[in-house]
Image 1 (tube, helix red, strand yellow):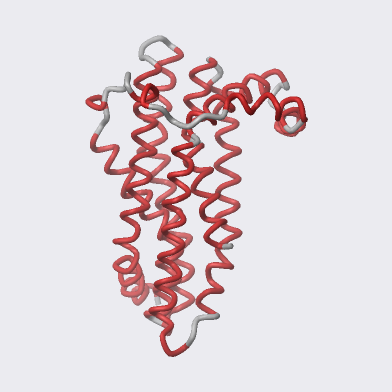
Image 2 (cartoon, one colour; image 1 turned 60 degrees about the vertical axis):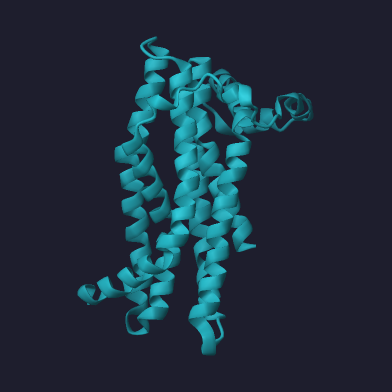
Length: 262
């Protein structure tokens, strides 16, 4: 159940990249960003809700091999983050179509999210939505220029995603490595995820927003924005894979660092 929760969280966060693409497509970027903020808020709330359940795995771990048991369980959870990102990637074209229409309806409803949800979940709209469901095709990628991808931004997003994916898990595992400082280690998870979120806001979000503005101002083209968005989703996927590598080293570093906080 926890793995399913994390899978949904990472699917939502991956699909959030399609909102700016939709906003640029229908020329309603400000409305798109309000919808983007709702999606991010839902994923952050869901992430907070799953943390106590993730911590319960430590409480229920057998005493004789607690470290091995918790590590195997947490690696499954990291794997579910990867699977959720893949699902989000496969659903990206579908949700670009969905969000394009949702943004238009949000503008028509004068920014009322409840009114948008009420309208969107009517039977007629759900039936109409079926025709917009399709998986990615090669034609979706053929116009993209991979030479335009900023390698530095790509690598930064991989690292930030890895830190965000294992922030809570490594902190909880560190509590097992240093039981005398367990509470300090667990509380460090909020700081780690906070730093990762700040890095995301400072380094990643402004770059994509500028590309979306360029499309609206006719200084750039939609294909460049699409290339950057696909690049960010791909780097996010690689970040969840890197998280498997950094999980234990990250936990050991947190356990070591907590001695300076006491």
